Image (cartoon, rainbow, N blue to C red; front, side):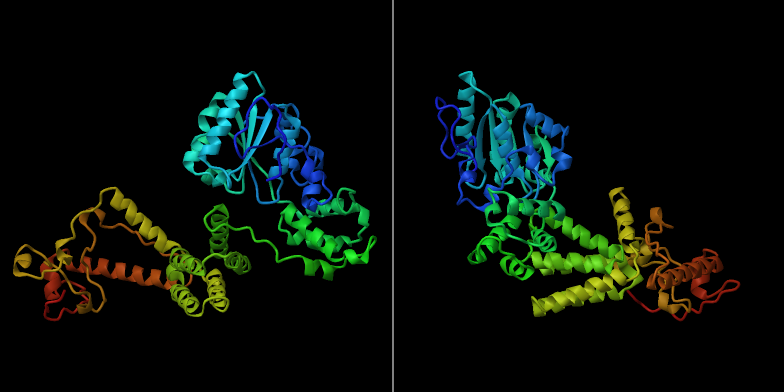
Length: 487
């Protein structure tokens, strides 16, 4: 890294790998990348982070008054985390040390802490330690900061693209303020690109002309990443350099110079959970356009398509269920089709599945029914199986009453029998409560009819076993053929 160089106190030895206080040498070089030359040198030059750094905002006040406490800067690539760290370094009178978590280990951490303690003991300034990509440090490495942050030996500033709730130890997180940097909007990115075209430290000397609409297109392709946008602008400027100063760069040249739009994604990080949540909620909300967008975005970002297929299979049961039993069959077929075809052809099978699931009638009655059962099981309702519906596979079991009083549903014209299939304490429980949606409406009517028939049969039987077995009883509508042994 060339972000920070030059020492503030030669009397305090620096640990290997530490880079202290920015001297600005790299960004002042004419051969430095455009993104480096255009890095903001004052808080007023930062674009797109007004909510965090606008006049009077708490973080800006603490920076300007040199009262920065330990903090975490969380934002996507190119949102200005390192730039903000540099500006803090420029503003503060503290000894400023920078590390990259990609290049450093526990040994270097201990050395920088020892150097901070020596500086403090010598009556020197406090140490601000900037850790780029702090989420790359494991738990043990993060724990090494704790006592030094607590004692005030260092002020820790960490930069991360990952959600600190997942990527930073809870103990360390509790000692740091978290400041969120947003992805740059197209307007902010366009302003940044226009500044790079006009500013002498950028491309101002070349007097390049680009239409505002074309510049906005370039900004949109960068997906909120300022560094990516400036790199693309520099690429097209170099590619057209032969035309000399005052040249016009058109949309075709810009399109040729820029790579495919960046897709922010981490299969193990927060963005994975954000996107799959967006897909499932879009399906649940019957929004087919949103569903296929999030599905395609995950596939194109590198997500395992079979993971998406599995989630849609679950959705078919959890959110559609018996409102459309065909949804589960289609979800399974979509998975099998992808397994046979792979990418890119198999993605269409998953897209077809997503659109069908979004359009299908919705019911979470199956999901809720299962949850109610689990709640009862956790509450201790694990009573023995009623004797009537136990399997009497031996003489001893029959002697003990297994299968006693069982009535075979197919022996009755009603297609059901008035026996209790739940343990006694749970009789009358209604776990499955079908909705008035799609096919489930018909299921609800069938189940209601079966319940009513059992009730009438029980009333006609008068609760007596003999009446049911002989077919007696006033108003009896059942016909009972000779009993046959059945499981």
